Length: 340
Image 1 (cartoon, rainbow, N blue to C red):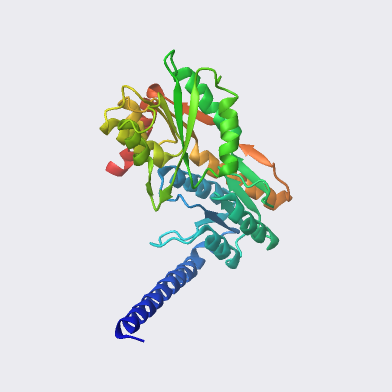
Image 2: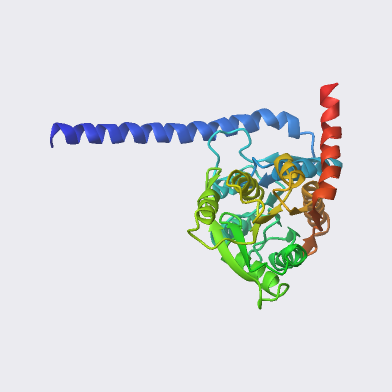
């Protein structure tokens, strides 16, 4: 073996050791963190784990807040698994940790359906009830689902397309977030959309936006539109908060706002600003805090009565420029106590 080969193997060995140490450090940090929290949640009657891959969004933070507030009413401590770690656990690892901690229930915002189904079933086999949120895994053993199903969501966006379209509207581009809209979700959404919007005049172009640690390729799609590399749509539907914000900034920067209307998803200060300035036509959202509360209610109903509704629907709300002003006032009122 040559000198270069030995150096290569040595370097690979060192990198492997560093990787193992980093993983173990993260794991033991979490165990230590949980130990320190024992005193905090030992006074509670229930320990609930809430798991999602989208914890950085303002929407999910509001979901968590709603769950925490509702949990307090039941004497339940709601823990966001992996919260505070730089390197996040995978969803499978987070569920395994919840099982290891012997939690009393799991609120789960699933990612890809196929790989998560077995983990949901594993938790249920350990006697831990699971409520899915926002996205469902109907073939799993989960106890209930809280959110809006994708067919109805497609219908809601279809209604807004009809309201927004004019006689010249020919093409609507739909940007699916790859992490949260799997093949089944996309199929049902498209069905709800196509059953609402007549296909004789308006055609749909469906694109999957890939997410890589917070970065997505929405910019590539908008760039192709601006450069004429793909047909310019009259309307763009964005199906999560991050894609909505990215599209809003790109449409504004590329000077396409007079030609392309954006229908977004969820609410954030950035999205409200885009609506106020006319770069976003409107956004369709559900009340995130309500979803958090209703998920806790569903879980505790199952804990107490061993039965719960198979599907609990959270109402959607369309926010246009008029309602955006109300949201702006609410945001300012919430910030006011912090200024005092």
